Amino acid sequence: MRLSARASAPVHGGIDHQEVRSLGLDPASVVDFSSNLNPFFPSSKLLSGACAGAGEYPDAQYSELRGVIAAVHGVSPDCVFAGNGVSEIVHILCRCLPVGGSVLIPVPTFSEYERAAVICGARTILCRTDDTLRFDPAFIASEIRRESPDLVFLCNPNNPTGLYLSRPEVEEIASAADSVFVIDESYADFVQNPWDSAPLAGSGNVVILRSLAKFYGLAGIRVGYAISNPHVISVLNAARPPWNVNSVACRAARAVFELSPSALFESKSRLFAARDFLVDALAATGKPCLPTDTGFFLVKTPDARLLRDGLLKKGLAVRDCSSFGLASHIRLSARPQKDCERLVKEWTEIDREG
Image (cartoon, rainbow, N blue to C red):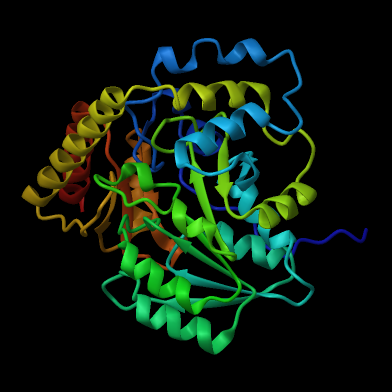
């Protein structure tokens, strides 16, 4: 047998059904704080009609979907690429690297950047932050100039920290990159007042990634997109598999862009109210939550794995951040108040049990 794996299996948030069943629990009963999703979407209105496309092939060029996305961001449809989630686009970008290419990644961050690079045989350059866990734009820019990578990934807002870089900070990093510079904005909709990055995509080397899975609660449908110049988009199209975005996902995505501003405002307000409630409730019990600009955040704990396992036995899923190199942190995503109250109660009981 000549098949071999260059990378290990993916490790992400979400509920492991096999593990949960081994604990005697029904996966549907587990309250999931481990996935960075907005629990106040999707609405029934958003999903109604999406499944009507299940019996048909999608448009091979995704013309209608790309046109809607282009109109939202004020770009040409030739500047838009539709993908089966942002993760697929990350892997396609790495497949387009030259042989022996290199990828620079500020860490800690989303693990699929490094994993995709390793699978494609690229050299990875990990640019580590200081103890504050906040990216240092000047340091990242200096590393880009020193290493001259073929591809740079920047997660903004970052996962797992939830911290968001300003336009000047991102522009400082972008100015150092003469290679392809990817800004993954999968969580930009979670920010109170995100700045418009679309004009940066007009630069010859910038790629903006966006996800409809996170804020809009469509993780199971899988749809994301890239905005860049027409040449980059044509390269991505040449490397993608056929029909990579299914018809149901296309219909659901178009419905997202038809949502009213008031619906988006209400959902974001509820999300931040839930986050603030959870942060305050944890702080009241002496659990230090790190600063965040989004609906998810890190909490310091002596042993993240031990806490994660203890809470899962009680039907609560949290993200052990050991895979990010943060063995003393868990990541939590805001949920409705009754779920947050239960988490604080069960966590407090675990502390008492020692």
